[in-house]
Image (cartoon, rainbow, N blue to C red; front, side):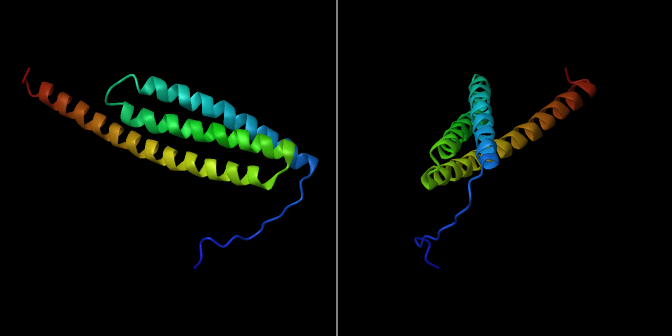
Length: 125
């Protein structure tokens, strides 16, 4: 299969679609900034930076996707839609990394809490 082959997808842009694209763009930019700020707070801890760094990258990709959606709504160029989709792909990739790292940390936290509880309940303090 040739992955360099390009196909064309075309669609009609209505005023409702443009309105929805602008809303999506705004929400992606707002949540992108929120994710970047949350990732920065998460990076304050040395170990939690493992979760925070991918979260910052995910927020940046989400913000860029929102910018591309905004350009696509304004200029109605296909390249902007492609950029938006590529950046949203990057967002989901980094979000998946963040999610997996968070699950690992939650499991480790539960194991540590249980081990501390068992240690102190047996009188080894």
